[in-house]
Image 1 (tube, rainbow, N blue to C red):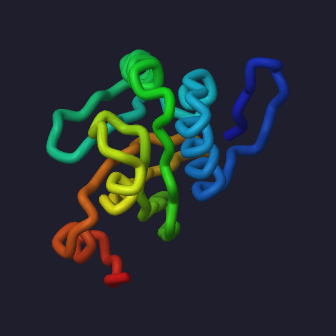
Image 2 (image 1 turned 90 degrees about the vertical axis):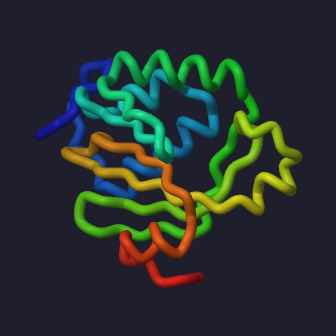
Image 3 (image 1 turned 120 degrees about the vertical axis):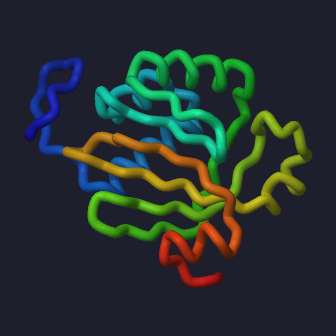
Length: 142
């Protein structure tokens, strides 16, 4: 499958890790249009224990609100693990809704799980970085 971009050029789908890195870069830049371009039509956002938000349009609105409310939000990947269509990103953030000083927020570790199909993110999931979730995801400590 090929992707047709706004300028009508046809491109080969991005490999999963490249798609995820592009998604993180778009988040860090507050570029909602680019985020949406990297989402599958049935894209699902799952943040910790909250109900999932499904669909490209619903996620566009959610991200637009988030980047407006928290324009300094940045994801800092420390480690990326690629397994087939799944990409796990271990890292931290600053500038989020938590309202913590950057140095304190950077100490809170998070796992992002992305499922990529045909170069588009079908899932963007935020998971607590703790021994239980690490074990379920097959991640070694460290």
